Image (cartoon, rainbow, N blue to C red):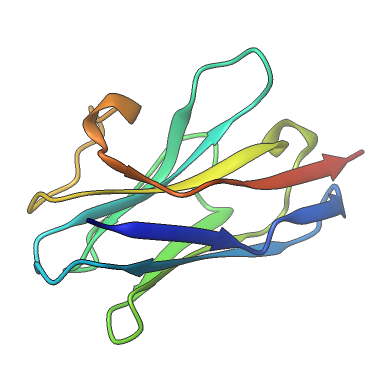
Length: 125
């Protein structure tokens, strides 16, 4: 069983930065796809960045060039560096994991088994 715990959310002004962390535990397999999702009120949960343990990354078009996903395999910790934040980035952000070799842009929230509790990010204009 994989446990995920996010931290690092908060409130910032537009143009600011935040770094989210997700501590993962309870798994030993090497093939895993991890990702950051976000969900704004009244909207579906969508992925913003995906990464596998080989450091292959995938970004949603809305965050490409502003967000960076990374993983520290020695500490089993996932990060999301968010720069040049916009009000439309306001959402609850979730860390997710699924046991598979590769991530894919076609993945949705339904393809992920393990989830963290979420951390709120609020960007004011």
